[in-house]
Length: 315
Image 1: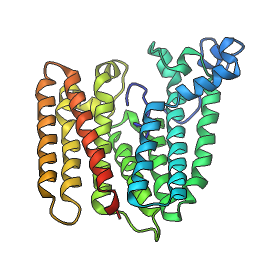
Image 2: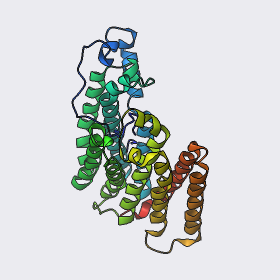
Image 3: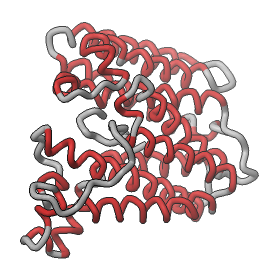
Image 4: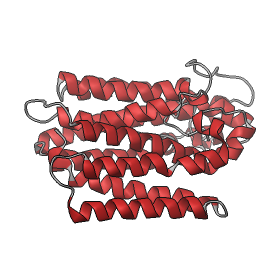
């Protein structure tokens, strides 16, 4: 799910405040900074929109779901349709995040975001977000009624994070729902529309919680300084760091032990390695905070590999 933080990141990145779009035309607003200047060129605006959608998470999530659709056994045409639905959903979430956070980012003095820097206007980003969402609806439902409903529920959870839940103790919930919905969407898109296996949905939800903690951790102190009070922020830097590996290692355990049949030596070995990586990252993170984050990324990569390897049994 587009990723998906407090640094005005996106899963949607769930933000404080309401869903109301920023007002246009006041001095110092991001909208005014784009009007009439060099950045108002067509190429500049297109580039600004591309950069403000959080392209890294968008590409990563879309590629992962396309790969899972292939390993799960979807037809070539259905794989393309699945990827298109996921892509539009992720784009809508990323643009929603940047548009909604623009004013707070300016107030906090955050730079480097294209909406804040004036490369693209807030209204343009809102239009792109709603256009992508409008495309996501028919593309999702074209994969089947239940598949589409599940995917759209995940996208709705991400928008809820962006517009409100990011600043609450429930900030973890949209990540859990969104990440669980993605593999379920792929499973329900298979011929016969089978229900997804319990373990793939559970693993997805755990990965989502881990992604939320990992997304926030690098900037948690700065977020606290600007008043962001999501779930990881309430735990504090040390609490979030200590908890970060737990859902990711739990996801590894579910992916190894959940499918029918014995896990085999390789499965137990992978589980042991992920646990060791997580413990090492937590211990080293006391002195080097980035170590905890790097270890979490390594465990998440292993989890994704396990998910793809288990793709044929997700339904």
